[in-house]
Length: 255
Image 1 (cartoon, rainbow, N blue to C red):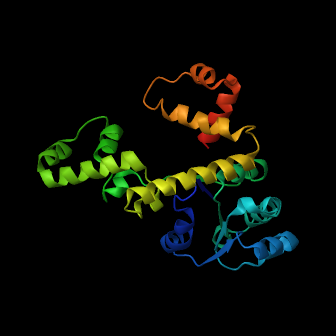
Image 2 (image 1 turned 180 degrees about the vertical axis):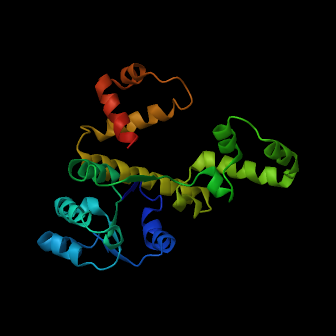
Image 3 (image 1 turned 90 degrees about the horizontal axis):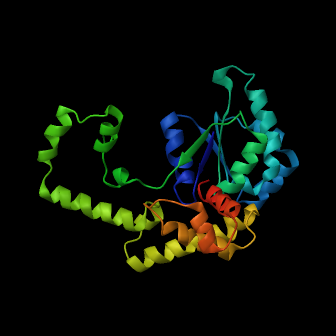
């Protein structure tokens, strides 16, 4: 499985703390942030992967070692020939999903399930237990009598709290580090640093953007059109670039 998603959505936390507990499996965690691990795997990746004895193997920051994917493909193919109860399960994740997805598509296509992780939703921040009311209405295409009966039971205090959380979520988004900060200045500074890292590392590393400043301006123009009818040609005209360039920017922004 490849766990994708933007930076700082909690992928590493999920893999280290929650996934092994939920699956009730012992695990080996390897982060390629460590240059020694990268050197070790560059020398004998197949041997190392095959000698791991735990049923769950978490490989973090895999985009930092593109040489890993061919050996991993070989090991995964060998594991698939074993009985199901003997197979090792590999979980791949990384902070630069643009590079990670590129390597997966080129090498592990058909061998890996992609699971995308998002920031906190409003439902998660309000601590709901059951599926949200709107999700149930959407799924059933109707408002059940039970849900209709619950609506008048919500106290004014609960409604005020929910509205406050909703407004905060709309303003700041759902990234966990944002919600770990209470001050407006701290939150704003974190988001600025996050955007800078995204532009200077993720987008620059992909190598499909000739001018990072133009891409950054395109981000702002696209954000200003939220909840409006979208015209690629209009954005192209305002930005002074070709329509195909805007399409490429959109593809990068939605990965």
